Length: 162
Image 1 (cartoon, rainbow, N blue to C red):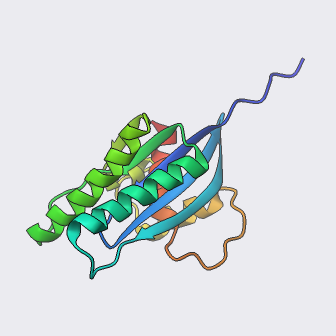
Image 2: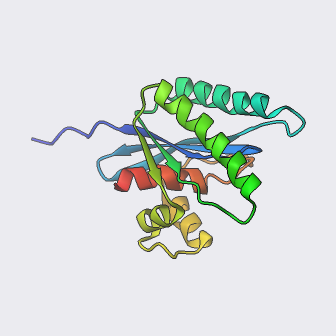
């Protein structure tokens, strides 16, 4: 008798940013990953900071409602050269996490090094190596995406591996 096919788990990966917050959705069934969707939520640079945060929050609420993920993964933010940029990125990340926890999704947080480790096998992998591995996952053809699905799919992949 053949074992039943594993029930897929849908994972939402988020690459937070104030100007553009990327998302990627994958399904994990057993040891198989399959691409579902990816894209980005863009906020208007001319809008106030609270309005931009609301745009990110509302966009993610809609994505969660559309794709029905059961788990989520978000990148851990590190301090970069410009402290103001780090603070703004942290606020975008806070909006993303707020949308996820409001939807009662378990949220895993990963560093870029952990994502590279999960996807490629070592944390010092080049961006091109991560892209090559993500492209190997079964994906439908995409019409010129506004943003590469690699970072967000990589976060979702890291969630799958941990």
